[in-house]
Length: 452
Picture 1 (cartoon, rainbow, N blue to C red):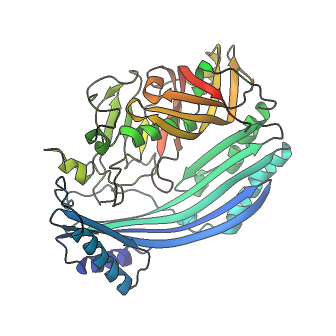
Picture 2: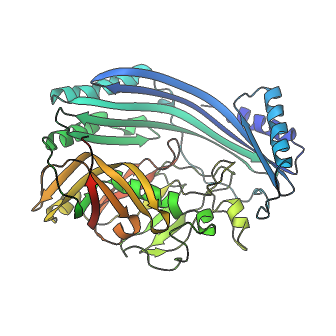
């Protein structure tokens, strides 16, 4: 575990070096380890250890930022001087009010697990071996990656902010492949490696691969779809990216513009962000050190709110930060990193059985935005796409390209699963998204893709 006392001492010493009107120091350190396997063999075992300081200074309404991963006294002093020089060369930012001051305490969160932090290459290799053995029994090829590590985030500023938290994270991703384009997928991550079941995941990926053997072509068009949480999580990530942040609203590029208090999805859709929930990967404060506030973004289909950092809150009278700042310098604005979607009362089997003709989708791949104001995205299916006929999965389908408004899709949700799953969110190391599976009517597939 990275020593909290030493970290905060370093940040306070850095503050003392700055003669700016206001100063913020953000510390990010990671000790990460990765084991990769392909073609049923481990082919890579790597480690990365790094620590960096990002320094933001304020001179009146001028803002300057500089960063370094050289943490000796001279390098830090030079970085502070560089941030001040950059600020002097800036124009005044008329919208900037102030760095945040210390108000309230952030929630305690159990984010560190000693067993995960001390995971060895041999332990990761044993897990990879279990995955590979399952694939070999089915005459399949397993590929994927297993990562473990520790991240520490700390922030202090000259107005009294002081926050520090260490996190552990274990993640396993598996792709099982056959020789005829068929593939299957499973992914899981947690602050505790013991909560990840590699054999169960390997069987999930292998089962999809076997079911998808000899995939057939299907014509583009509108279909009923059953989306696993991986695909649902992908859609929620794009809602966060495209419009759940205040800066996107203020700049007129959000699908939430002019829609607060209005219905924008079906009544069965409720989405919120909660960086303090143990169901997700909690991050109790943001990158300005502000305690994270749970925020309801959509409730029963009605647009309720967006998230703020101190800068965007300062642009609106009577508004305060909700604790969703990203690291500075940041031109993108605040973003929710711990999204949740309210579950329903259906099972995945019920969704399939109630579908006369449709497509089952495990996950999306290479998804990109097309029309931010309408939340239209395009991407491809991958690693487990199946035709549903008369309430049964019939056979694998060659991957399809979709072009679809997320808001329109969430207006056509007919069933929501009771079970939810934690899937990766926008940030690879912190945060996560908790989502159910969805059955959606009239989902728009616009073309075929190359072989998987």
